[in-house]
Amino acid sequence: MPTFRDRYTHPHGVGGIRDDGGVAESARRARWRRYWDRHSKTYDREMCFVDRVLFRDTRSWVCQQVRGEVLEVAIGTGLNLEHYAPDVALTGIELSPDMLAIARRRADTLGRHVTLRVGDAEALEFPSATFDTVVCTFSLCAIPDHRKALAEMTRVLRPGGVLLLADHVASSVRLLRATQRVLEVVTVPLGGEHFLRRPLEHVRAAGLRIERHDRFAAGIVERLAARKPA
Ligand SMILES: C[S@@+](CC[C@H](N)C(=O)[O-])C[C@H]1O[C@@H](n2cnc3c(N)ncnc32)[C@H](O)[C@@H]1O
Image (cartoon, rainbow, N blue to C red; front, top):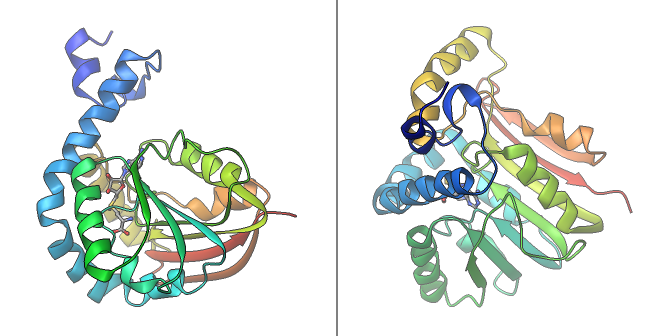
């Protein structure tokens, strides 16, 4: 049986046992918020390198496809901001106040009028069918319940709206997948970072139509545009 301490030090409880009955759930969220608050200081430096060597032109690939009212989920430090058209109607939500503070500064520096607020991807505080486009980049690997987050993104999309996703996913090369599996043993408990997820499968299962899709770098990077049925 998990002890009291176990439940409150592991984000998902012990051995995957969830206690979604309130207290444990908010303790889990608070833990990841603190994690990303701490990480905010070095995030941009690290991500610039990964963007250059692994994700390549993905930020502009995503941001150039947005239309109408746009929600960016888990916006982080706002690294996508410079890739949007200057007049985009953008709302961004983010779990970590410190990441969000950097995004605010970035928006000010770029002279962008965006609405930024603290929020949880797993429980979006917007009515259904609010946005024409929903964007999420490099965050579904880090959001604890990525299926719940995807269901929320689909809910807030208008019928006919587009979901734009980019992330690192399970490689298409078996040896690399095995390495990712080993990596996860450390990265999931320490940083909530998953390497074996494949959001595309859940998007398809939810009934969205994949309109554009790219996968590269041994299948590790995947980006897609999927339309919600009208
Ligand atoms: C790897 S960063 C990606 C940030 C940004 N999307 C980018 O492209 O650089 C993952 C982000 O997801 C955020 N995050 C994790 N869980 C979240 C949740 N449940 N709700 C909202 N944001 C969350 C973290 O705070 C962090 O800023």
